[in-house]
Image 1 (cartoon, rainbow, N blue to C red):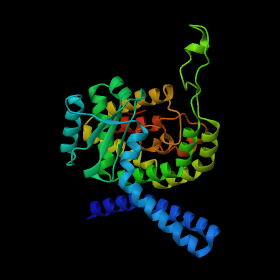
Image 2: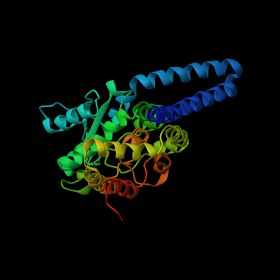
Image 3: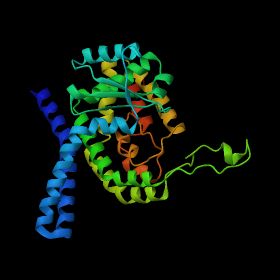
Image 4: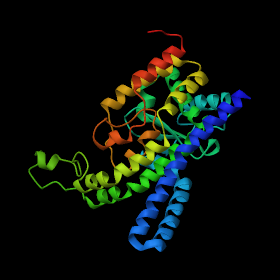
Length: 310
């Protein structure tokens, strides 16, 4: 009975965050509606917020995968990846999730979906390149632990809501047209510069992110907590059977994300909390979205789980 009570408490805690985020969003829309058009405006705003939440629940997995340009991966293309996921899913008594591959060079991974039957796991090409089989098994165990721990709906819903809130920043990106290189002598710097090679975000996109980003960050921080990563680390290590391998994978991922940090644009910044490690540098607006505990503490706990002492 005690085990069932603890499990019920964990499920209640996992559901509390998304409910709070949705309630905050609806309340904010109602206040805006009242300010704009009184009581009638509040009703319209609440209806629009409800429609947004339903649409996000239906499309949250596709929104997150498209933000990382992920594509479905076949078993013929990556048989070892499928084998590992199938074995871990069988050990965890879960349906085998769909597998996706992102072209990002940064080593990272995430799970998304509304529940075990709609779950999808996405790995980056950089992850498959830098990890050995034991480390990859540990990372996949971590993601499957998120599925079994009922973390998916809350984290995916918050990612979808944050994407919707920061959507105007994407319009700012579309308004910024790439500059074409000036005609110049063959081999000159002007003729060799590729189209749209400017670094960073456009001024309009940055301004819109500064305006809407903090609201999206509140939604994310209310829906997810650092404890879910600790729980997924422990459960994933037990599922894969090798806490030390997962600790080694986290070391490589932490180094890779620092070296190959992604640009926190309006789409990716809303899904960064889904990943096993934050894909952005801890600076600027990206700091508001950080939902990951320190990598050193995660590694210490995993090594302690394996019996190592410091």
